[in-house]
Image 1 (tube, rainbow, N blue to C red):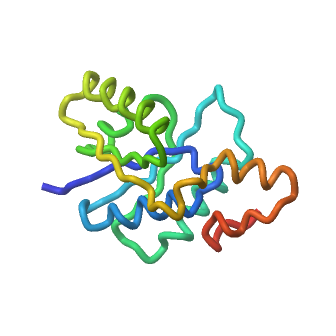
Image 2 (cartoon, helix red, strand yellow; image 1 turned 90 degrees about the vertical axis):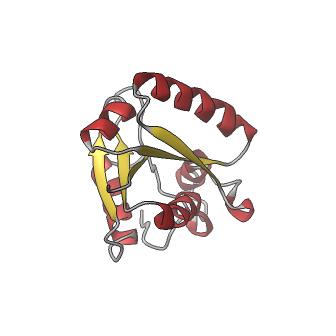
Length: 152
């Protein structure tokens, strides 16, 4: 049985924290689908195509990684991909409370799909896409917080 996991996110932009979670998940799964979300209610700084392109460039040499865009419920996308796991990263207790609630809802929607939590490495735990977007919007140097493949 293939162990497929979905790592959903907006990746607007992808950060070193995202990469940290993905790299640490490699040994646990046969396939990881990076599910780049498209939410009609959210305004993105970068296009879906650009966000997908960044992730494809970062993981070009890893055959375990697939990158796909999606919209709608993550659990429905996971079912469509025949995934058994959702990967979620936790930076702090606020993330935990939100993600715990989401995991419980997803478990009610499909008890066959489990959520696996990874704590972001301590040296990266302060990085968030929203902080990086703010730095970018104000012309600051964001390069310390994103992979080298993320070019604006």
